[in-house]
Image (cartoon, rainbow, N blue to C red; front, side, top):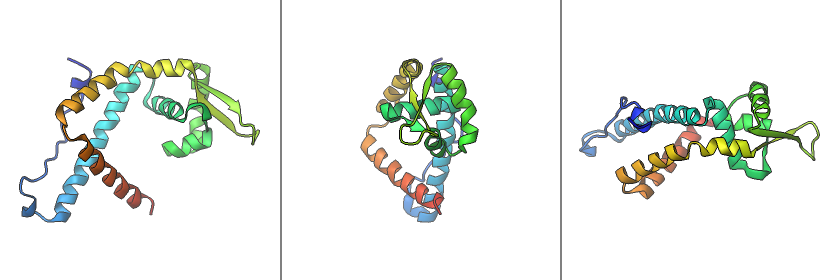
Length: 168
């Protein structure tokens, strides 16, 4: 059994075959339920990828964020805001990742109180450990979802609606 086959298969929600048979509000509720189920699956997928990188999920997410920021890096405050926690809650994990050589922590030149986090070569190596797993997932998606551009547009629209709803 491959790692992807270990993903749970429950929580499936189907849209109706005849969209005119139910109201748009009911259809939107069904779509929202699908998004929530997808979120639970994404959390499990992230946990599996973190395990491949020999990290816990929060550390894996922080490492991915640092990789995305590249050489510019990010402050602890910026990282905390992105992952939705207070900087104090992140400082322990950052310290551990610096000790493990996954992140570097340097003084910010414009504000000597702030620290810039950057991914290290060891951090990149850990992320690279997930490449075979990610490649398998991409292959499955390509095989099973022929209209990826449509899916991307639908997901973008849903994301915009969720962002708007959660920023109130």
